[in-house]
Length: 245
Image 1 (cartoon, rainbow, N blue to C red):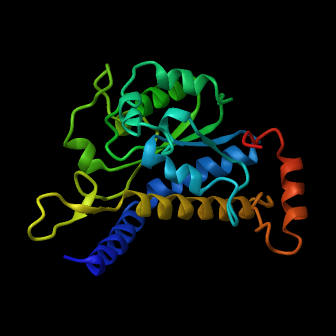
Image 2 (image 1 turned 180 degrees about the vertical axis):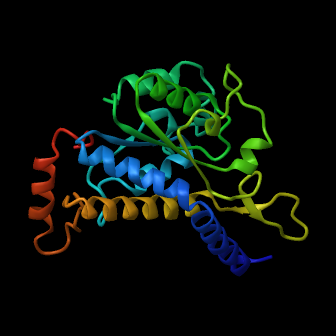
């Protein structure tokens, strides 16, 4: 298998993940739109590479200005040694602290991305959300998650503690390409599929807001004429719902 096979697999996986989960995707889009319409808050969180989708959808041209990333320094990819991210993701109680320190409250919406769904911090975040009346949407890999044991003290995996579950339809272990002579698989799919899914969900949420007569707070490129002024008006209108400025 080669790079062309990888592109084909990613494309097929995105199509499968999107087209086979219409009900869950509609629920996720509805929760995001409803939270924004109510002037509640929307957050997105992931550890290490799973956090890339949080970077993808905040302060982004063509994105909703009110999606707030949760960036914990020990989970960012500039952490050194990078192996610390794997160790911290397994620490009980850390997810509760991160939840409590990020302005998340009743009626808000929290998107959590975790491919295996087995580690403690994402599960703790979801459990805290449930205790505080926060709706949770997870993007995970159900095949992978069902093949491994939870590392959470309660024995729960992420898909078991979230309100809405979106499956990225990846393979166990995430890497999808086998090459003769190489024992390990290469070519992970979760980031590409995850960013496609979350952008598609955001677009559906925007459509729902428009159908309700709401002007969605969508950012323009700062490199387009009029972009700065357009974005400044959004930042002012939604200043109580944006926490990354």
